[in-house]
Image 1 (cartoon, rainbow, N blue to C red):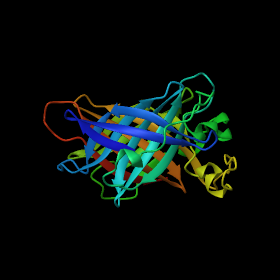
Image 2 (image 1 turned 45 degrees about the horizontal axis):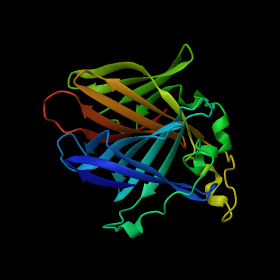
Image 3 (image 1 turned 90 degrees about the horizontal axis):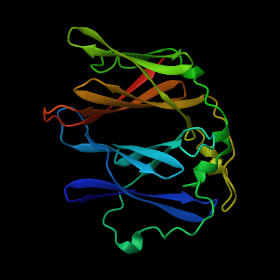
Image 4 (image 1 turned 45 degrees about the vertical axis):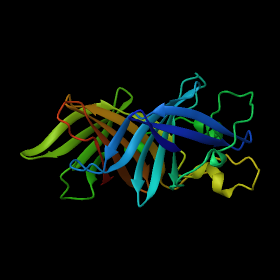
Length: 263
C-alpha cells in the first residue's frame, strides 16, 4: 500500500501478490473513503478506509495503526456470480519511508484469468458456506467500565444475521437498534495454509483452526453520524474495530476505536 496526497485529497494505491500466476497485480489508485483520528478529540490520524473495484470482486481496505504497524483488513466481496463466499484477510505493513519508482513492484504479467486479483481468491475454503453459529449470542465488553459499548448481541432474523448494539449513555444504556451484517470467511485465522508451503508450491490448503469463526461488517446510520463496525471471531473473543464518521457540519473529526467482547 502507498498513501499519497494529491490536490488536497488523500489517495491509496495497492499492489497484490498472486503467486499462483507468478505476478504482482496493480490495483491502481483510489480516493480514500475516510480518514480517522485516534479519538473523538484528537487530530492524530491513525486509520483509513479505501474501496477497490476489481471487476470480478470489490475489496474494501479498513486499516489502522497498531504499535507502529499498519493493520490492513481486506474485506472482499465477489461480484462475478461465481458463488465464492466473501472473505476477510489481514496483512501487517510497516513504513518503508521515501521510495523511488525503482522501489515499486514490477508490472503485472499477462494472465488469462481476470477473475483472480490475488492468490487468496483461489482458496478452496471460499467454496464452503459461512456458518454464523459461533456469533449468535449476547456479548459483553471485557472492560466493565467502558464508556463506549458495554454489550452487543447477534441473532438470526428470517435467516439473516443481525447485530444489535447497546451503547453507554450519560443517562443509561442507549439501544442503537438492529442492522443486518455481512458475513466473511476469515482466512487470516489459518493463513490459508500459506505459512506451511514450500517455496513455489501451490499453498492454498484448507487448514481448520480449533476456535476460528466468521468475520462480519455492519454499519449503523444515526443521522448525524455513521458507525462502521468490523469484527472477527478469534480464540473465543470478538474484537470490534469501529470507524465513526460524522455526517453533520459540527466540524468534529471522524475517529477510530476498538472494543473487545466475550460471551
